[in-house]
Image 1 (cartoon, helix red, strand yellow):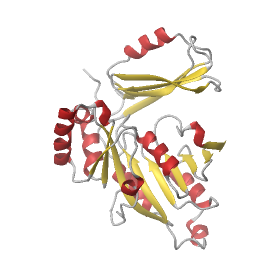
Image 2 (cartoon, one colour):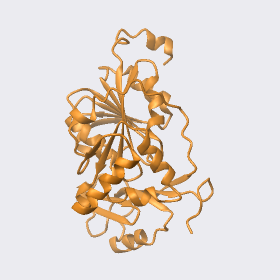
Image 3 (cartoon, rainbow, N blue to C red):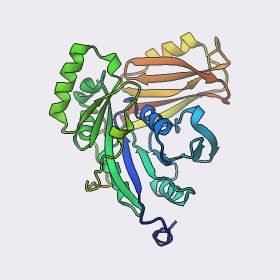
Length: 304
């Protein structure tokens, strides 16, 4: 769709409000997006710009068509397989037209810079939200490989959602909150499982923010997907996960195990933390695990 065609839209005077949700790998961005989709009373479009597949909760999905997912509550979700411009054009052309666009930024992107897309025709920036993992944020911030990314994600933001506070004890939580107030001026909202009051999360009114479209970072990442057509042995799989090199910062996927072949097993790996939980009934053609690693062939250094 061209800008000329979009300018003819009679709804041009009612811009779509844009909320950008960012944060490092495994912080809980998709969990927060799913919470927004379940809880919002307005029509929402979502663009997911992350490694791996769009991961909208199954009970929200009504139908899929290529890179677009129609949700049961009238919302839609688009991936950026063909680029942001195509995804934005899809959303602008959708009927009924969404009232809000939520962009889930890549875990290694700077969300304030992704917000540059909110200055396109028919859009208006509402706010930039950064999700951080209460258990791992300080350790990641000290990393020589990803520390700069973490710092940039938390510096230019309108709200910080401090997720997974249930994994941190009271004393550590007080110390963490004190540390965060030194690294960001944004309000801090503690959360479990991405559950945040939408009256706090939305309506930040940050439309005067100025952003660049580039996303410079000294760290490069690589992503690949492991696939299995047949059910796999759970013990062997767990051993393989435990033996992943230190360069692997994130893995996520849905796996079918031989000891429970009728059930989806949801795998989440964040650093050394591994979670394997039961999902819904198995209906997929194959198991898939997306692995994200520091890229020794790019700008990133190889962990020593």
